[in-house]
Amino acid sequence: MNSNAAAHSNIAIKLPKVSLKALLATIRKVKNGDRILVSPQSVDEKLLLKTYGFQFSEENIDGVIYRFCPTRNKSIETISSIIYEDSKVTTYKIALLRALVDISSGLHNEHVLYDSEDGTDYAYIPYGLVCYQWIKYYWALIEQDIPQIGRNTYLEFEKPLRSLIASAQRHYVLSPQTQYLDDFKIGFPNDSELERLTSEVMSKLRNAIKNGPVRYAGNKETFSSTNRFSYTRSTKNLYGLSDYINSKGCIRLKLNLFFEMQVFGNILSDAIAIKWAQESVRLSEKRDYQITLQKVLPYLLTDIFEDRDQSQAREIARRLLQKENSLTCVYSGKKLGKQFAMDHILPYSIFFNNDLWNLVPSAPTVNNKKSDKMISLDALNTSRKRLLEYWDYVAETRDKVFASELRSTLKIDTKSASWHTQLFDAVARQAEVTAQHRGLSRWNF
Figure 1 (cartoon, rainbow, N blue to C red):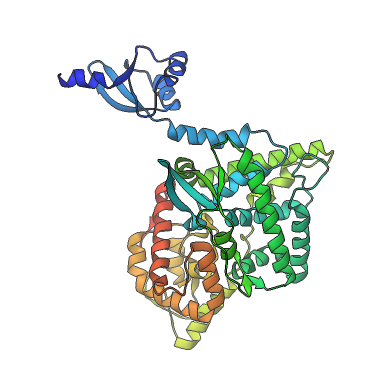
Figure 2 (spheres, helix red, strand yellow; figure 1 turned 45 degrees about the vertical axis):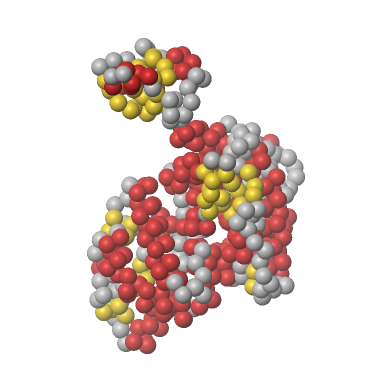
């Protein structure tokens, strides 16, 4: 058999003309990986082929060969269906989708686990992280009495969340939500009001998510619950976010869907927020409670940590300056005086992260040049020794905060002898993967 005959033996279908009707008939007959032979196409016909999952393979004297690879398209269709087509009596489905997208494309994806079951690859996202995201999303909506359900009733977790909000407002003078979520990473004193209310809210949230959108969003195979990778926490005086992450089970989704969320996270999150605002307006009309998009959007599009200051990180740098009589720019190695900048290693505009490990002293000129650019691997490697030395000082100065932020954000335990290497590798990985997915320009000193 000659090579041309061999190539033809691998062709599932020959399609003399590309049309919508012909493609719809074709996708019913082919399976993933099958090849079809089509006549040379116009640009609009090529676009139609791509739309239905046919990827260009090769061209020969008989025509053009396309391989049927619908997985990526199906993942996008799943996301789109949940946003725009799934029936909704609450905002639960949209909230779940946004939480999964934000976790997939953010620093918390360090907590995501991966495995294969029956030949299918999956990602496992901890329920504790999803519940944490829901507290962030719903706090202001509940506080502002913006309807999130179409009936004159309460969301399953609304009453305990209202009690938690009231408690946080009594406990914190400024920015109750921001301070509460910061302290959640560390943990609240055992048997305190905030600890008790947090436990109740997290339990109610998990039940609402598991029995609602995880079960009903998309099709039956889109999401599922599993207790894999969970363990029962040991008794502690403090009960922080990392304990919830490790003990509440996971949401399982196919790896292809997770990948799309990771790649398009920054775009998808805003699109979901806008649809969420539209749903809030629709639900308010059902309750004869008129609100507008202009009122809802700011609560869904503005990151709650946007106005958080860097006073704690700056105070640590000042202490080092007083102790050593000099401060070093972690990037250039230049000695700094009282005029120094605190730089986000991983840009705040991308990750919205103010953890102490992500804020380091730098020369103002270097900080201005770096701006919101993603740091390059070369710049990280050049700065490695200075970074590790500064992290050591921060860990000694604010050990509890530093340790809790690392555990809850990057899944790193400072009790491990290799935590320095783990932290450096996690920062490098997040910088590289995010830059690749989003096509970001890199900064090199």
